[in-house]
Length: 191
Image (cartoon, rainbow, N blue to C red; front, side):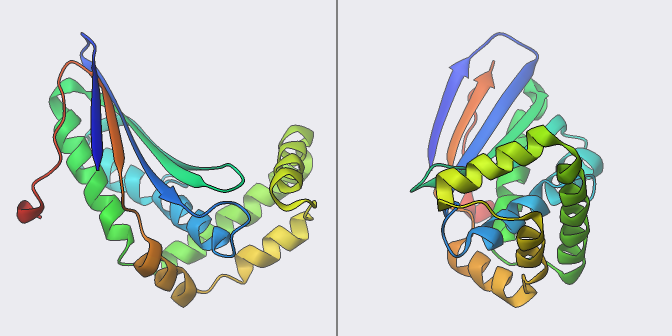
C-alpha cells in the first residue's frame, strides 16, 4: 500500500482509501458493484454500521465505484476528528479486508431491495436516467433498459459474488489523509 499525508492544521482529518477493481464493461462488474453497495449503501451498510454507528469514529463515511473504460477503482472516504483518525483508518481497512471473506444472504437481499427502489426513482429523474444512459453508451456502446439492469441485479447469486470477492477482493490500497497528523498502516501481526 501507498500512504500519503497533507499536513493541515485542523481538528478534522479527511481520509481517503482507494483500491482497484474491474471496469464497467467487465463481466464481473455487477459483482464488484454489489460489493461496494454492501460497504456503503445506506444505514445498514457495513461501513456506516461499524465505523459510524457502533464505534462512533466519524461523522461521514462512504464508498463509491468509479470507472474509466479500462480501469476502475473504489473510493472510500471518512471524515473524522484528528484524535480518531488512526483508529478510523484501522477499522476501515479491517472492514475492507473482511469483505474478501464474502457477504451474507441478508446483505444481498437488502442490496436487491435498494436497487429496485433506485431504479424506480431513476425512472422519475431525467437527470439520473440520462447519466446512466450516457455511462452505458460510453462504456458499452449501447444503452441498457432499466428492466435489463434490474434483471442483472436479480440474477446475482451469493456464491458468485463471494467467489469474486475471494478472488478479487479489496487490496493494493492507496491511502491519503489531510489533517494535522500522518497516519500509519496497521500492524498486520496485530490483526
